[in-house]
Length: 241
Image (tube, rainbow, N blue to C red):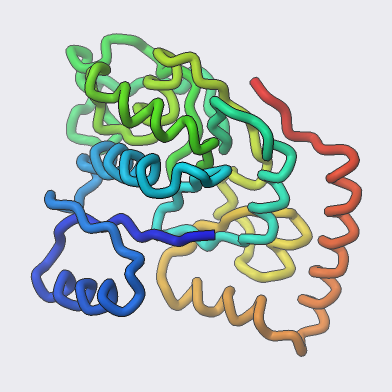
């Protein structure tokens, strides 16, 4: 597994720190434009183009926002049934979501002259989604011929897949789970792939909860997850749409 951080330009001081980190770990993909919500589509497309050229032999590419805590063992378990698939995007599936045209000051609003339809094509939510590696090349190479929108998940996992006939699959642990209390027990018992957390200290606390082998609750939860995993491999509920 290879981890890469895609980062566009921010304040000069933070970029200096990131350059030093990149020299140490060689895991940062720098992009020459301002890092903002409206540039997320461009950021994802350039990331996919880089991945398709440098990691073409990977089985999957997984895109994760920086406010997500990802439980890697559960992610790998959920992706396992799709090991031999191609032309597939996986995540929290949205069907016929409304396109907001009324208040163009909101970050999710989109002008009718850009997207004239009342609802978006099916797509998967942006905080975390996966795709088979062949899809990255299909999306990055076809994107210049499709009129872009700033809603990254809608464009990358919805509009282009609609044009290119790319399939979607549901993964149950990719949903909106902010109502859960962050803990190792919560993530293991509910088989969650990712949890949205507000700040880095919460992520560190949750990571420590996983590392702390002395917590009986965590041991019990991890043991129960292992048992459930064996059942899920034989009765997998994920399905292709």
